[in-house]
Length: 402
Ligand SMILES: [Mg+2]
Image (cartoon, rainbow, N blue to C red):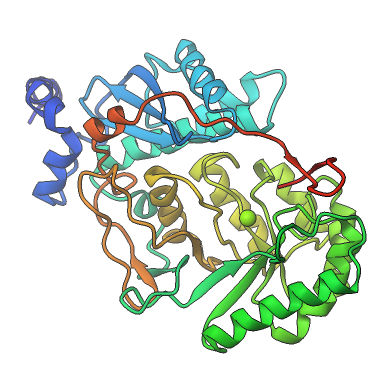
């Protein structure tokens, strides 16, 4: 088919396809043939964003080829991300969506004030959507465009479950009635947290990998006490033992324990992870594809981490694009460890992801991110995001981390 004829044909299909989604139409065919020719010119025509009542925030990019791409952003500051993504339209509409890395650079470096959670989330959501478009344009999942698959299936953690075979979980440093937020917790608190972890270990046995997530809510002296006290029960990793704002403090704790430290959900771009790696502040990196820089940046961060023998375990408490984009990363990097909340099923999808079996999620095979958003279901959940409220110490009323 000549280029113009193909475009005209595609154009005629858009009207029919738009109602059901072009992706679904081509997904159903499961053909190896590309949807458009590799040299066809396509252009971005529209950027839309959607904030849901659970604070998930989505970006949708449309093209004149009828292909649409979806991405997700940061749920804190959801409205700011949604508004910021629309501002990118001034630059991106009319551009070739297939130049994904070029656009990442343009959006990131086009800003005089770079990085930070919101700006990087905007770049990340748009990056996911552009990779989604590119994969759909070439008829393959993104990991194939990025040199994969590097594995056949993706280990996930979330809820231990006989049916899914998931055998890895994460727990907090649990106490009765309060959290361990004091600068230096006493013996009673430390013993209680250890006893609770021991009970979890006894319940699941040695065959389940159990990480402990301090959530950056524990002060460094308490974190140090807990790290040593819990070692005997072989936690799989310690996550966010402290906030990542002073990397030297995290590195000091990392140097004093043989249990691997994990961090990354509040670190942005390759420049953020550079310091973690160089200072050996954590072994396991947990970048979030929704706001560490998207698929483009996670691939780079994984490459940097590989030079330090550090694995990647993408952070993911979010929606279907977050999980799907993270699975694409798992499929194209060598140093992948496990996917957080990889066992979660998403009702916003028109068709479920391949189910988790024996603790592993098969790699998606559909083009792009490998998912089709059910736009009716998504639109039904658009609304005011939930408020993020500060947390207080229930003894002295001071502000604490959560
Ligand atoms: Mg966490």
